[in-house]
Image 1 (tube, rainbow, N blue to C red):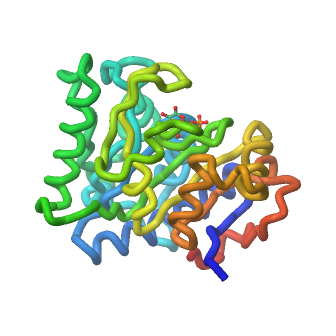
Image 2: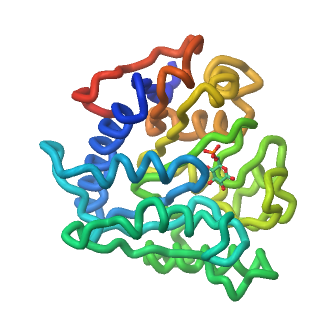
Amino acid sequence: MAKQPNLYAFGDVDHLAKSLRKYLLQCQSTGVERHNAFKVAVSGGSLPTTLAKALLAPSDENGFVDFSKWEIFFADERAVPLDHEDSNYKLLKDELLDKIPADLGKPVVHPIDVKYMDDVQGMADQYQDAIMKSFAAKDSVKIPIFDLLLLGCGPDGHTCSLFPGHELLRESDAWVAPIEDSPKPPAKRITLTLPVVTHGAKIAFVATGDGKRDILRQILDTEEGRSLPCGLVNEGGAERVSWFTDTGAVEGASWEIMSDDPQFEIN
Ligand SMILES: O=C1O[C@H](COP(=O)(O)O)[C@@H](O)[C@H](O)[C@H]1O
């Protein structure tokens, strides 16, 4: 039987954040062992707030966050200035980056190059080059393997800027692609493509609150949900995918919920 993603549900966001922290520390260790760095792609939306809760908590028995080893890329970004309210970079900066205590070190962060604001293809190409340099990828290297992709799930089942039914879901060459007709504003964005997302060493979705319940039930329990972008990530990433949810978001779903115990070992 094909291996399935892991579904974790917690009573509230505080408990979720505690387990997410443990998971992140495990991913950090694996990344540092692999290439002396932790290469992570981060989404916008509701994710950065929960991420900050997990990462800015005091060090505990699970270890400490060594931001000096972190290299942060954006799983998707909107083609807006870096100080614009719609910018995923600004969101992460406000929620997390500006609040990192000096003793935890400074991550290397890769924002978009704003000189390509009117040329999203150029912006996507530049971002792909930045990833290629970081992974020291020669042309022969087919795909970058991020240590972790941190993803959100929109109410329509989109993730990154990969939207249901959009032709970008079929992109198989580019690592980063432009989109000029995003159904969710702003229309112009860049996004990691599905093959890059599904090749991640680990892939984590964070989806909380009653507002996510209907779409989660669809993704996790129905045939049509499997063809939504989040469903395609589940299919491609299988057991490398973990969903961090709260009980509000998964009530009624028939998938096995693996644990709500913060001491569990994360797959
Ligand atoms: O537009 C976007 O939406 C998704 C989902 O956001 P959420 O607020 O529903 O969690 C987000 O993951 C993506 O990065 C963002 O650009």
